[in-house]
Length: 406
Image (cartoon, rainbow, N blue to C red; front, side, top):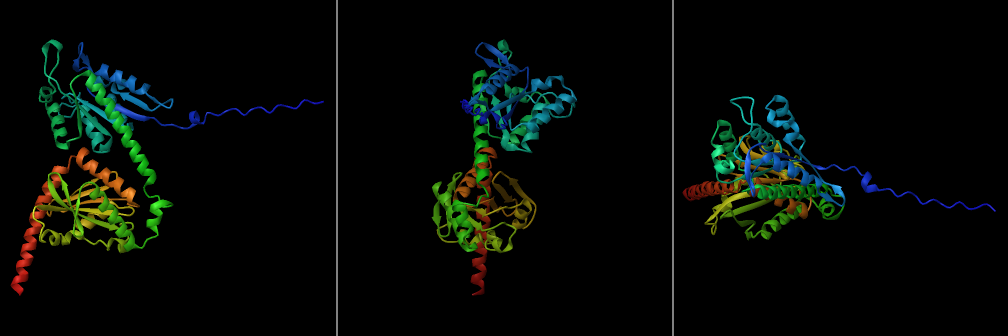
C-alpha cells in the first residue's frame, strides 16, 4: 500500500522584513572641534554628535530601525575644501530633517568674504524646506579653565559669525536651548521626536486630503455649490469657536495675540480656477469697512480673512485674488498666507477643504506655522491694527459723503 505523502507546511514568509522600508534621514549640523560644557569639564561637539548618531540609529520600533543619521565627520568637513562643502550641501538636500546645533560659529569658508558652512547649510535648507529645520542653541558662560567661550561672544567675533547671527535674528526660527552636553542630547532627541510626529501628521493628512470616495467628503461632493459653501464656512467657524472665538453677526471675533481680531470666513466650493465657484466669494476685502464701521465694533481690529478652497489653488491665483503681485506671500504645507503691504489686507488660503476634518486639521497646521515656525503672529496683529484704522477712516468718510448728499 502506497504511503500517503504528508503535505509539507508552507514556509512562513516574513512579509514585514520583505516590505520596502525607507528610514527617516536626519542630518546633525554643527562645528566639530568647538567645546561645550560637560560634567567632567568640556567635550567637543564632534564627540557629542557621534554619540547622538549611535544612539539615534540604534533606536527601533517593532524590531525595525527608523533612523539614518548623517554627521559631517563623514565628509571630512573640517578639510575646508570644495568637495567637503559640496558633500555637505548634497546631504542637506537628501536629509528629511536638519538639526542645527548653534554655538555662535558660522563654520569654515573658502571665501574670506563668504558665509560659513554651518550658515550655508541652514540657509540652504530654510529657503527650500523650512519645515525640516530644527535649531538647538547653546548657552553658557566663558570659562578659561575649561576652554569654554560664551556663544554670544563667539557670534560677534568675526564677520562670518555676525552674518550667521543676523540671519537667525531675521528668520526667527523656533529655537530650543541647551546649557551642556546632556541638555544638548535631550534637545536633539526631542527635535527628532518632533520631526517624526510632524512627518506622521503630514502623511496622515496627505492620505486624507482630496479623497472624496467615502464618508463626509463624499457627502459634501453631493451638495450644490451654495450648500457646500455653507458647510465649509460652518466647519471653519466651528474651528475658531473651539479656539474661543465669539460669533459677531455673520463673522467672528477671536482673542488672539493680545487683540480682538475680526475673522471673516469664505468658502470656495470647487477649485479656485472655476469662475462660478470663485464668484460666490468675490473679493470680500472690498467690503471690510462695513463690519468695522458698524456699531459695537470698538476695540476690534482686522479683519483676517480665511479662504477655504474645496480643492486646489495656486500662487498665481492667490495673486489674482489680491489684485496685484507686490505682496508678502508664503506657501505652507496646507495653503498660503498672504498680506498686502499697503492696504494691510491679510488672508489665509486653505487648500483641499474637502470636509470638516480636513478643514480643522489644515487650519491647525497653518496656525502652528504662524505661531511657532514663522513666528508671524506679532506682524499679523500689527497689520490688523493698521487695517482697522484705515477701514474706520473709510467708513467715516463714506458716512460723511452720504450725509452731504442728503
